[in-house]
Length: 248
Length: 155
Image (cartoon, rainbow over all chains, first blue to last red; front, side, top):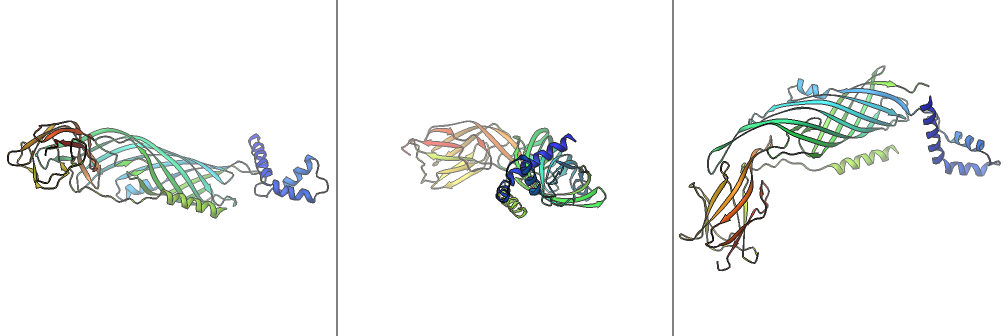
């Protein structure tokens, strides 16, 4: 109740500031321009019905991404599970946290290079709902994430053959520690399936910002990011449970 | 307003964009790049043919090459000091001794493995060479100059 009245007050201040020019014009036409009650009435007129007394917290959603599991089921080398939580503020801004666990166990058939890692990863960010005027959680959104992970990996390959002097050098390293940070631009949609259950998908444009390289090896696969490259595209398919909290 | 935000998002997306091709080196050998200088520090080139061999092998790394002002030579994967013999003629030779560390390195699944090196020290005989100097000690696949060879001016 307290939170609701604070949010109403904040919105009232913002809308008052934004509608000052309108109010100034309106005041010219008003005979009696004095008194706080007059201002209050004008603010009420300026308020759009959708913004009036809109609670700050509109809802909370939790979701999971099924692409990581699907990838493994269809024969991929990478398996990851991911959950996220999102707070719906004013049906417009949606801060997000995401956490997952990824594993990669790959053997390159051509070069016989083996790479293995498994580690948790995290993302924080925010979505913006382009359909905020509609009182629904079936939305089109865009957002930004910062992801980070700390992990270790094993890598081995056939021995390197010296083409001039002859001889060979074995290559087998275990427990190389690494960390990485990246940014993601996200765009996606969500639609209601049944009651509070929604599904959605998103495309993600990822850019690797930092990674700790090792003298023997750069990481091949970064949990939460993907196969190491400066830029990657990703895809998520989400099942979402949305709990509305804007009951008046 | 929505269109404006959409456009901003698209512009940011494009700004993030970059071409990305996988270019692999065909061999997994990283070469040491040498450059020839006179004692005044000016880049010089040899008009007479030069041959370079690796001591301890029958490999001819450079064979009778003319008008050279740079050369690139490999390092041994398993030893820590290599000797290269520079033949100016049948009887005129200099030897270059390179002390190094060998670093096998995973590049990518597409490009495979490579052998990088770290040059610890370099020295030479002084038949025609005045001195040698490390200019970049990390030997990877880049084209940086790693060792400078200063020749006496009467060559």
